[in-house]
Length: 378
Ligand SMILES: Cc1cc2nc3c(=O)[nH]c(=O)nc-3n(C[C@H](O)[C@H](O)[C@H](O)COP(=O)(O)OP(=O)(O)OC[C@H]3O[C@@H](n4cnc5c(N)ncnc54)[C@H](O)[C@@H]3O)c2cc1C
Image (cartoon, rainbow, N blue to C red; front, side, top):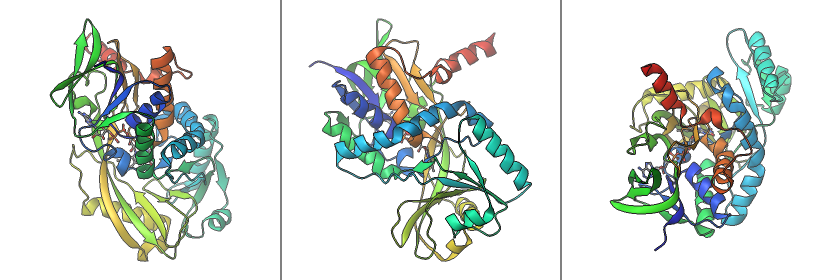
């Protein structure tokens, strides 16, 4: 039997989106997942599509994040059409709320930074913000409107992307852990999965925070898990249209139903691969969201969970070819993998089918960690 054109290791939103994109080019694609696909970070996320930088570390990501946000409406339409499933895309914007410190000055700095990055964020008067979101705390000191932001039901999206890929002919194998890469004459010729050898022209590594555990991968993708805890609420009285976010937490409306489903998060914890919901984590999230919308105090908690973000040493994704022919990385998307799925899929498809990309991705090269190591050694 002929091998595959592309084997993708990992069936999360990243692996699934790449598979779907490649299948539209009529390539023979296999997705391997060590468990049921779509059950890790892509399931656990909040689904915010926010290109605005959380801190100076994430500024280099903004051009890619903006490009991905622009692709989102078309991406969602194609996935919904191909899968026959709705994915809960909401392009209703977000409010960034300042609740402490020198809020006025911080708001001006935030807006200047965003404008410099091409993000049309606006300052709101408090009355305007309360009119838009009556549930917002009256203790808010300053508020910015990020009208370009959106959100998606990441669980529904991941399932739909995988279903769309399967309908386009992608083979998806669950319970098939990849342990190592196959090499032949200096190139990567496939993977060892569940004890069997699977050959392919190209291998795309998209195993999230677990990528570095696969033999030979950590030199390109030294990923590590950062745990995030989450809470879902069902609210009859409080109704939100937009995402509300402060420096301490966020609330994401999932729908416009009454009662409304809201998801809230999150923590950033170095707890290894242990997924656990803790009293300390919940207390942190709940106090942050009650500060944002005090009316939520009486709402029902319907679910709690945690997930593992795929972080990297510089907190930026690992995207692109390696120094081994046939081996491409698409991992380390840390806090933004849901947002970055469409652009990641597009760039990987462009590279595999045409050998170039329509956007520069060298800043995210898998070779940067090798170079950093060489510099430390010399
Ligand atoms: C609490 C939380 C909130 C978040 N909120 C947001 C948000 O609002 N917006 C946003 O854009 N991003 C958010 N993220 C980040 C986002 O979830 C991730 O960046 C994204 O899901 C990464 O997708 P992935 O496909 O690379 O990884 P994953 O979804 O983790 O998928 C990796 C897959 O690889 C499989 N795998 C692992 N090892 C192997 C192996 N050896 N062999 C075969 N398969 C393997 C796993 O089983 C898994 O299915 C959040 C994350 C968390 C945890």
